[in-house]
Image 1: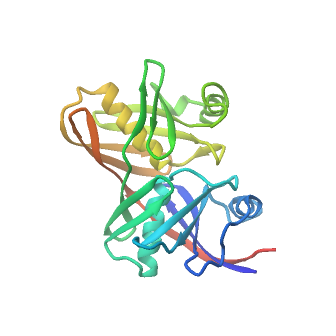
Image 2: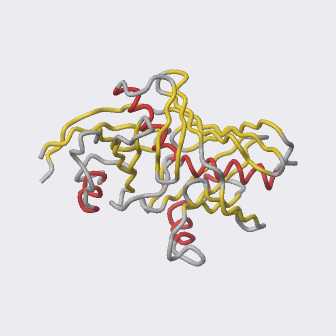
Length: 264
């Protein structure tokens, strides 16, 4: 079987994207997905996404981690699949789609740039040693003095595979405050089981944790600028009555190449 695919990246977070509106690639096996995402024996990616039809929405996003298993929400993946829908001519400047964590909206103000509305934040835990927020995916946040000195792979892996996260896993973010409302974020991602060049739900969680723990929490509109190893992202939101609303993840979403691969 020959499979048409597209490769997208959002600040270095890269994905295989497949137009599955015809149902040509339904329920792929973990082995198939992991092989396609393998950087030596496949196409290479942090994850794989299917764009599918769903009544009442422009499309449905089905996401698989690089290890082949179905994943929780991927923020940069959501931005990239919206760019793909725009490329296919399904949408123009705005979209409404369904993902594993619920309904999302996107805006595409200019070519190769997508703004994604995130779901309501859940399960917020703050402490001196770390923070935990679920922004569609679970995230542990650690504030550090110098992110470049952190062994992201080994330190992140140790946190991910030990209590209290051992059974379900977690994404681990190391956050350096570089200026007021400016962060540097490096992330170890579960499912990829490695450091990635960017993580959309991770920078969202990091921005909100920073706001809650490191600012005076003024009500109103806020924008946090974030540098990741693959480029720059931003998170903006409203904060009112001790609650976040209108949380948007913004940044590049670029098609890298397309191709056909033979599936055995």
